[in-house]
Image 1 (tube, rainbow, N blue to C red):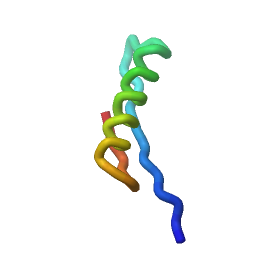
Image 2 (image 1 turned 90 degrees about the vertical axis):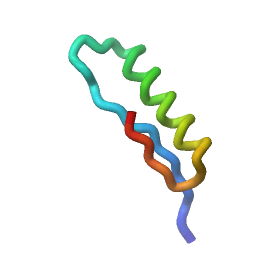
Image 3 (image 1 turned 135 degrees about the horizontal axis):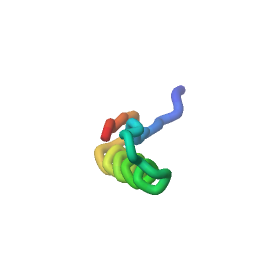
Length: 43
């Protein structure tokens, strides 16, 4: 039996600060969770 996981993934863009990175990855995570289990969303 596996453990379901949803992931939000982003890359660091020149000029990013920590807040911008976390905002993008957080948005990607919530998008993945809304799609369903075992999903990875790349933002």
